[in-house]
Length: 119
Image (cartoon, rainbow, N blue to C red; front, side, top):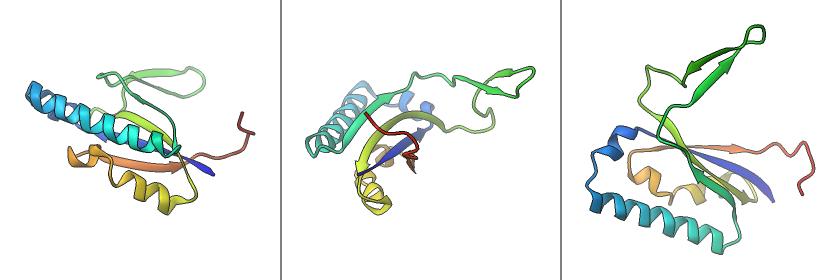
C-alpha cells in the first residue's frame, strides 16, 4: 500500500483564542480520529509540531537561514499524519474526517515517493 503524508496547516492565533474547554474538545477530537485510523492499521506515524515558525534554509554557498516559512502568511504547518492508503482517493477520503478541517485548517495530501525500500 502507498504511503501519504497529510500536512496540517492552520493559523496558530485561532487556537490561542479558544477557551480551555474548547481546546480540550479539539484535542479529544484529534485523539479520537488518530485512534480511528490507528485501529484500521492505516496510521504509520504523526506528530504535532511546536508552536513556532521554525527555520528555512536556502542556497548552497552560503546557506541562508531565516525565520520561516513565510512572514506574509498566517497559516503554518502545525503537524502531520503519515498514513497508508491504496490510492490518492482513499487518502483524501480518510483526510476528510480530520478535525483540522473543522477548525479552519488546510490539509495537503502528498504521496510518499517509494524510491527506497521500506523497512
